[in-house]
Amino acid sequence: MFRHWMRHMAYAPKGLLRYLVLEKLSEKPMSGSEIMDRIEEESHGAWRPSPGSIYPLLTWLHEKGFIKALPRDETGVKRYELTDKGRKLLEEKGKIRERLVERMVSFPLLLPPPPFVGRFPEDRLGGLHDPIKRLFAAFREFMILSRGRATEEDLAEVGRVLEEAAGKIEELNKRIRG
Image 1 (cartoon, rainbow, N blue to C red):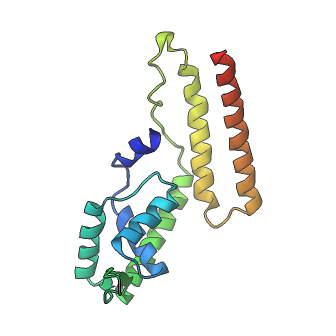
Image 2 (cartoon, one colour; image 1 turned 90 degrees about the vertical axis):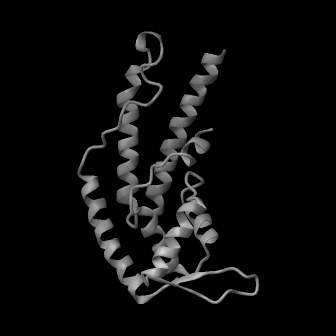
Image 3 (cartoon, rainbow, N blue to C red; image 1 turned 135 degrees about the vertical axis):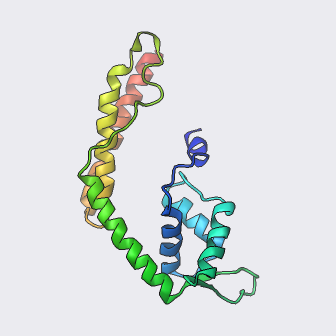
C-alpha cells in the first residue's frame, strides 16, 4: 500500500530527474526503460519515473546536445550516451548538488505531523509526533552524511538499530492484538 502511494506522489524536486538521467548515462549507455529500471532499483521500489517523464527528457537532452543516440542494437533498443557537453553539465550539477547536501545537513528537518497523528479520539497518538520527527531527522541526516563516508560497520549498525526498533514495535503490536 505504502509503495503504491509513494509511486503516485509527485515528490521529486525539480531538476532531480535530469540529474539522475545524466548520472545513469555516465555509468554506461542505456535506454529509457533501463534508466527507469535503475532509478526504481536504487530507490528500492519507492519511485519509478514514468515514460511520460523520461522520454521527453531524453528528447530534450538529445536536442540540446547533452546526450547522443547510439545506433539501435540487434534487438532494436535505442540507447543513449553522454556527450562531452553532458559530462560537463553533470559535473556542474554534481558540484551544486554537493553544496546543497552540505547545507541541508546544517538545517533541522521540519516535518509536518504524520497523517495519523491527531486523528484518533483524545489525540492519544499525538505524543508520538516528536519521536517520529526525531527518527526521520536522524535517519535523513545519516543518509546525507553517509554518502561515500559511512563504513560498512556504520551501515550495519544503523540496520541493527532499525531492526531492533521495528522488532520492539512488532512485539507491542502482538501484545495489543492479544
